[in-house]
Length: 147
Length: 122
Image (cartoon, rainbow over all chains, first blue to last red; front, side, top):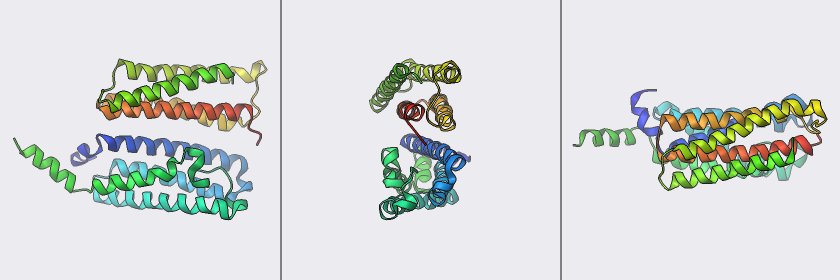
């Protein structure tokens, strides 16, 4: 990590990262078990589950390094992907229950995870919008210059 | 799993979680109290690991998936040390909130572990 990224990950941003990390852990563990034990029951839902887990890991890392413009863009893509995923799969659990009505992070709009998967992307996007790379660093620098 | 121990564990983790979040939002930095609460949560998880190793051999086998149970238990046991490590890295009020979130996550995971051990038929 470069030094300008340092002050960005303090405060409430860290809380966001830890929630993402816990979701990544939960989704990874669960999709691992599902794929090992009963992949045949719902291959599509469980593949999406594993994909969701991967995107959570990516989003966690991207938020940590969001100080650099490239990771900032990755964070946007990962979080928007999640939002689309939870809305799409959440809807499909009701429309196509035979394919999607299996316990994954996104099924029933994340009800099995206290709807955290549904709420989290909005917080993530809010944080990204308010912590654009450059603006914050400039503030910190001007604050450092000021006596 | 043993029901009363699960109940104790879920209660302790939930109380520790709420306590740390309230302390954190009130502006307290990680203290002996909040870090100690997480240490207690971790101690109970280690006890649960020992019990889970012994239980199937002494006539208390799980009816659910042992694999899924262990994935949860190991993940849960990693959370408090990670949160405490973070709290030591940056001693701000948000680190106290993070301690609380980790404890609440442990409470939820232990509850689900009990469901997996006792009633899940899959």
